[in-house]
Image (cartoon, rainbow, N blue to C red):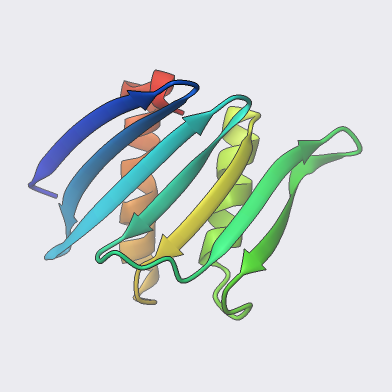
Length: 125
């Protein structure tokens, strides 16, 4: 991981935070839209919205509920990521994970970058 870029804007009740990172020779872009009570996170290398998952906490279970709203159900990355982020933040989370399916180490590095941004800038989530 060598290259980092961060941009933020605010549009009334929605704030937007963008950052990028070079992960294993691929530039990965992150787009966060913070909304009242939750956030939308898009992760990708090109401007494509190929899937969308949503997750939220439930008082009846320790694991947040999660469902795929659109996309290929065999790609579990958006659902899993949305669920883990909802558990960590206690917010409703929408995730679009639009990176090609690669090895698990790449996915782990991408998720670690998101966690790092959450720790450095919790106000954007």
